[in-house]
Amino acid sequence: MKIFVITSIYPSKYASKGTTPVVHYFAREWVKMGHKVQVFHTESGFPRFFYFASRFIKKVLDTRQGYVVPTVMPKEYSEEVDGVSVNHLVLKKHKPHSRFPSKELSRVIKVISSRFGSSGVPDCIVGHWDNPALELLYSLKKEYNVPTCLVFHDNNLFRLADFYGKDFYTMTAALDLVGFRNQTAKNSYFKLIGKSTHSFIAASGVSSPFLEAGKGKGKTFERVDHFIYVGTLISRKYPTEIVEALSKSFGEDPFNMTYIGEGEERHHIEQTYEHLSCKGSLSFTGRIPREEVIQYLNAAEVFIMISKREVFGLVYLEAMALGCITIASRNQGIDGIIEDGVNGFLCEAGNADELAVIISKIRRMTPAELSAISARAKQTARAYSDIAVASSYLNELKGITH
Image (tube, rainbow, N blue to C red; front, side):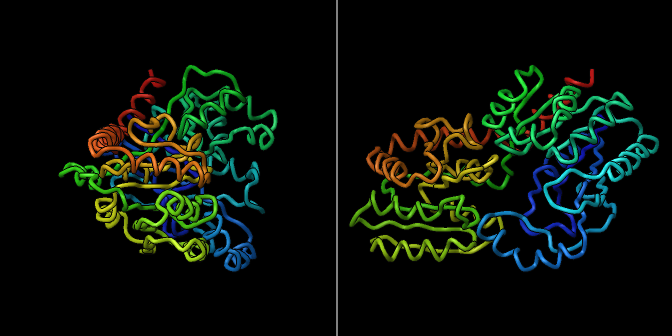
């Protein structure tokens, strides 16, 4: 198959630190399967004063809220990465989170159309993130009648009706396939647009180093006192509430809590820890390479992250691949993958009291009961390997090309 991919977020030499490579992972696996993939990275370009001002607010938005803030004006260039042909394009607009001018969209459409001649008409065109992919897909479908698919990366899709107005319903009606990063987003879309028969979940995949590491000897769970969190230390991920819950559950008993990541909430975590006079111990590693996270997950019994606005949360599956008892947030990105009490536990986002109850429940469980949950967690993670999710995604695309 020839697959064209349009995405506003993709690794590049001008991308901010922390930019997710999720779309590249899909494209890379499709190339490994023998398919031809061209990516059109539609990066936003703003007036120069924006980048000057962003340097002053970057720390606040990055480390406190988790927003990725660009500080460098991007430039257009092309490259090949892991066999994927990538065209980095810059679309100019005056302010973030706004629609792009029609002349910028027309220019990009001409660039993509020109590749039809050099590479041949693609079997399908895939978009990730709605802006500007939705408008580009609509125009390309209208002009060339190429099958199109759009994957939304947002849990709350009700904003789109206001953002696009009546155009939203017209453009989405033209799509041949709609993807979502999780079941919560899919439900949101159905409430807004109505039931669709052509939809799927575009889940992220667990990389082989995590799966290979999980094949070793399982955890014994003789003692459950080592907990871990992996992610940015920002308010919407509620890392401080973990300490509060551990204090309520353990009381005078000792515990170990490891935080992997960095952010402004570290100071709040340490203040809370001192105020509660916990008998446990805290350790902070800062940001470390993903492969190094494996040894920390191997050493822990329980992984906790009860964040809100979590679109998917690959780190949950990575912890599960290592056999950790995983506590995730309910009605967020992992619903439908973690079944409460079966292969992990679900907690209301940010609810320290409920989290304390869950931790206490885990502490009361027998090693055999916890080992069974751990084994099911590993089994779930294996079903979401890089190759498995890319193959499933590809099968959905094949369904619209016939």
